[in-house]
Length: 222
Image 1 (tube, helix red, strand yellow):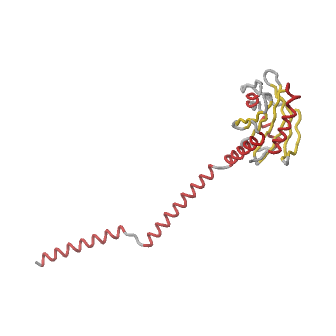
Image 2 (tube, rainbow, N blue to C red):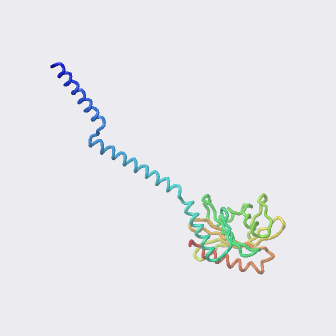
Image 3 (cartoon, rainbow, N blue to C red):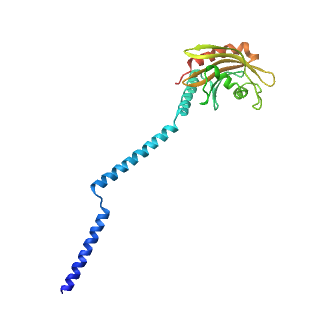
């Protein structure tokens, strides 16, 4: 009988010890719980910080510039009611069959001043908009350059500009007259230029010049 009792007591002791070991493995002390909680919180903060940093880097100056340019396009559309076509780096405002105004803007790689904008653009490859909208022939595989007749400093409604007049001749000898400005606005380099076929100069050029002056003077976001 004593042997049986001893066996039962030994078994009970073993079960009690096993339960105690199991509890010690699964239960953390209050200090450890706080430490783990703080560690998780810091990890979450770091993830949020990295996410915000990634978001900021993906919405930098280029996107902000695009937003400004879209606002400018909408402003000119609404104010002047022109038919507009958007290219990668310009807006075209149509007036008639033989005249057009082009607002061209430069990319982030430009680091010059107003005086440098036209030389930067006048590489022989900037006439696809003129060729498409006027009755001229300037194939992209050939070079056509703007011949400058005059270039002077000008103040247009507080904008420091370079006022330019000149012309470009297509491969068939048709001359396109040009009048406009280069300037830097909201840290973006622009060229606002009106183009008219020479044969229409007497009728069209004064009106286009007035439009270019007004559009340059009033250019701003909505």
